[in-house]
Image (tube, rainbow, N blue to C red; front, side):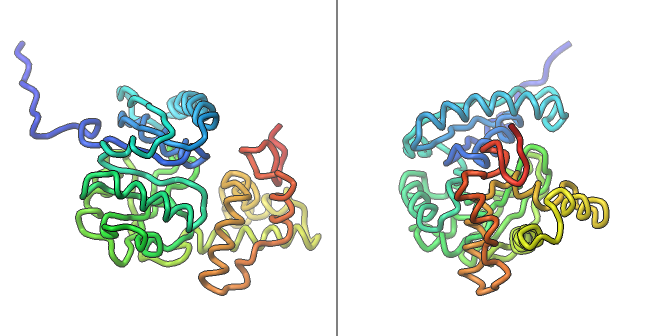
Length: 293
């Protein structure tokens, strides 16, 4: 039996995409797992070497979990992972995913620096949950290369991604992000740029209200989640979702929404602020609304 020659004119997704992920926090780790599990090589960058080392261990465990849950394509060899503390690693990437802390100044500075290192035409993605994409694009020499792609946590289990087109985002960037998400087997829903876009603008104020209900003594944490699950079909309940998002991340997002929209319903509830002060950040710290220890 003869084997057909390999056709290099149609490279595989693993050949087309080389990712650099910036930030080894919860979302950076999750996006890395998603990409590796679909065979894409990833260079994960963080300024904290200890965090990078912890992230590498987490990624190995989450890859196994994702495989056990059937969340990865069968027969696909995992992509290779490299880690480092220098943004210069992004120079050879076909796409850079920024997943640093939800702070407009920090994100803009990181994106501005990395845009000066990559080849013109390289797709730049911000995984912001609330900051308008065009606000961040203003820091770039080539704002047309920036797209918002809001992955949900954990990215390897949630098959839809919110894609945010900024006012200056170009057609080549939109085509590139569509190709990348196809390689990751993710459904893209494109929305217009605005504070919080769709998911955070609806979900985060709802979680804020749930925290207020508990704070006011109307119901317990468990009862709020049970009612939202049993009566309204919410898959986990808003307060378990808060623990999954990270309560510090949630407060940062609500603060952005409050500042950008003036909606007082987005002012972080006192209970959320107290939990952050106490270091009860959710699953990642072992305690939040619930105890995971």
